[in-house]
Length: 482
Ligand code: HEM
Image 1 (cartoon, helix red, strand yellow):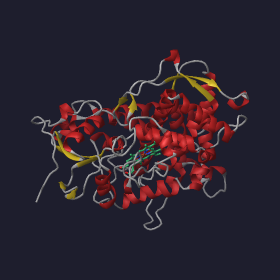
Image 2: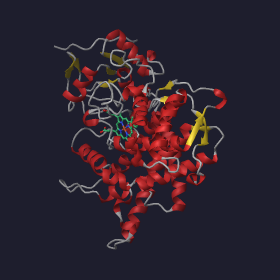
Image 3: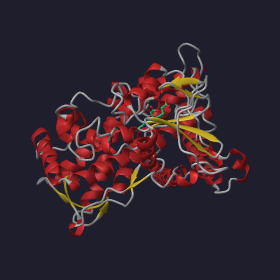
Image 4: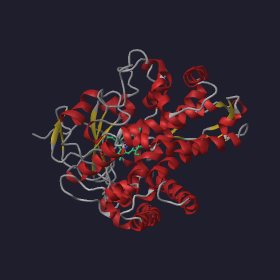
């Protein structure tokens, strides 16, 4: 017997679309207060199901994990992921397992992450130098975070492949293309809700995504060709150029599945790279900005975090990635930031492969299921003072909560089989950049104007207005900034 979840009525043709508002995660929470922790919405011709209680999240993400291990890609995500050949949108099955194993178990093994650390270190050092040059003047923290993260990622991708001269130009082009794509992907597209309109591409979202993706694809092709050329040139020789593990790209080109002997196709390889850039840059840099904004709003927390750095790292040293484990207070700050400002507030939508039951309600096959992590992480029944920024909670009652998604009221990286594939790298980059910039600089607000915490929903949940801050060197030994 079919018993669909309750939910509001919309208007003919477009359903609830006109009432979604700009920050849909908030609208979804308000609707949950009326209809309960599971409800449905019709938007255009699509059925959406919203879930916002840990018990029901567990039903979806653990008890019926395989049923919900598929996504429902939008037109734009299909366009940027080479038709859904990436990790995030490949249907659950052998191809997805292979891609995920390459990225999670092999590329992000402790040994490989450690091996790529000098590349990350080099990029963060360059950002420190840039900030040092701007000391005493207003800096856009979002731009700083984006540049640092994307430079670390590109350096790990192909830093060992490109020569310094053309490398800088290609990386600059790549940065522009990625920022453009992130903006396009953040726009809601009417064609996704009313598929009969898709062929008209009324807002031009598909056209714009394809244009930006082509640009990115051309860059991937140049770099992949260059790497193949270098490999061929040095075939059979035991040279530095032949060291396949020196960047991710070498890794992807060399990969052969142990069980099937399959290599990656070029589209798969490009989708893989696109995924890591799109999945990794916006999320990590947004988390950086929110952390800095909260620290500037809470100077006592900023001081504690900086005191901890002074004690652990010392005034005569720069931060190294291995310090992260010794910074429990800063870790609590990051956890608290990701509680209040999860970059993916609704995770990535799941889509049941067959009609199933959740919370006693029928979820039809193909529905788009959203887990409202944002709402659960601010639920007053689950958290004390839920809207207050209190990192101490992660040292007290909530000290055992981590990013693994085992506890369903705290899932900023998702949970289950399709949990964030870049968690280890993301956590490392975030902790390393934050600890470095907090140890090396004081951050002041210009004209005593405290930052606001207005949000902007898009591909990630960004701060609505840029975060502007004035850095001042914190360490006496200015050689450390060179
Ligand atoms: C603060 C940083 C990050 C946050 C908060 C975050 C959050 C998320 C979330 C919520 C999901 C969906 C999980 C689910 O459906 O259960 C996800 C998926 C994913 N993330 Fe992240 N992410 C971050 C960083 C990264 C980084 C650095 C990368 C890559 C370098 C990355 C790559 C991916 C990929 C490939 C997926 C799709 C996984 C799949 O479908 O199997 N993420 N992320």
